[in-house]
Every structure is written in structure tokens, then in C-alpha cells.
Amino acid sequence: MPDVDPTTELGRLGAAINEMLTRIEEAVAREKDGRDRLRRFVADASHELRTPITAISGYAELRHRGGLDTPELEDRAWARIESESARMGRLVEDLLVLARLGQTQPLEIGDVDLADIVADAVTDHRAIDSLRPVEVRGPATAPIRGDKERLHQVLTNRLANVRVHTPDGRSSS
Image 1 (tube, rainbow, N blue to C red):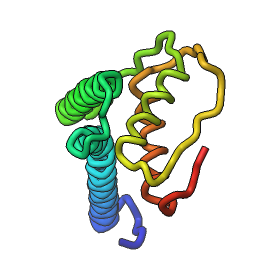
Image 2 (cartoon, rainbow, N blue to C red):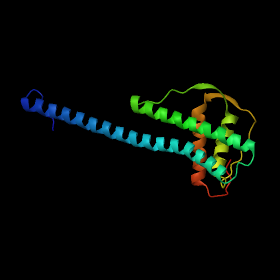
Image 3 (tube, rainbow, N blue to C red):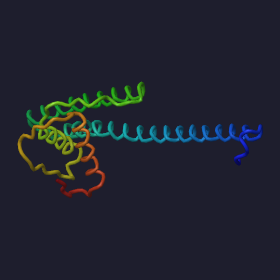
Image 4 (cartoon, rainbow, N blue to C red):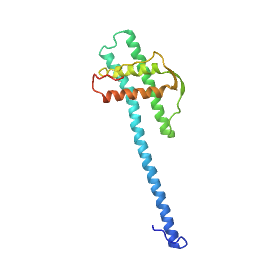
């Protein structure tokens, strides 16, 4: 409403209506922001759960097709299935925490070997999709400080992008 002399009743009414409209606009903007965050959350959660499920399915397919033909390969596959199942469980727990509190779990910073995390992520990738080979180059150990689960999450997401965005048989480093 146009500004009118605030000392008059009409001016005070106009100011009150303008204040009310401003608050309504702010509430609508907050609601839209909440819906957008929820959409991003659902998309992220789906993506995060898809990766360990795909890894587990890949190992099951390898087993079914006879690709785990030595005890060492079978033991390694079972260890990765257990690891991915545990990671999926932690992701579900994070989702429950987010649903309850609206916030993520704090980072668990500690000493980790990035080379081990890379090796596990690449092993999972190879079980999921052997048509998109990935070559690892780097030191045998790479001690750093970080959150092991979040680092694994980042690497598996990157490798999932390799599977989605590169043609079969194309190598990525």
C-alpha cells in the first residue's frame, strides 16, 4: 500500500498491512527454501544409497557368474559386501538423524590411509562395472587426517559418475 501519513488512522492501517504482507512474503520464501532443501536431500540420499547397493549387487553377480574363482577373491568380495552393507547402514542412520534433527552427523576426523580408501572404492567399481576400467596410480600408502566414511563417499560418487558419464571401455584415472 502506498505510504500515507503515519499519524492518521489510514496511514497506520497501510503500514500494518505492508508489514503483514512483508511477513507473508518472507514466510513463503522460507517455505520454498525448505522444499528445495528437501528435494536436494532426497536426491542426495538416493544417490548415496544407490552406490553401496550397486556394489553389493555387482559382487553377487560376480559370484553368480563364477568370477570369484579363488578363495582369496571370494574372501575379498565378502569383506567388501560386509563393508558396503555397514556403510549403507550408517547412511540410513545419518538419514534418520537428519529426519529427526535436521542436521548431519559431525565429521569423525582421524588418521586414515587414503590409499586403502581408494583401493576399496576402485575394487567396488570394478565389481560393479568391469567395462569402464579405472587405473590407480600413486603411493602404496597415503596417510592423511580426515573422515574415512566421507572420503569413501566422495570417491564412490566420483566413480559412479565415471560409470554414468563415460562410454564402455574408456579408461579414467
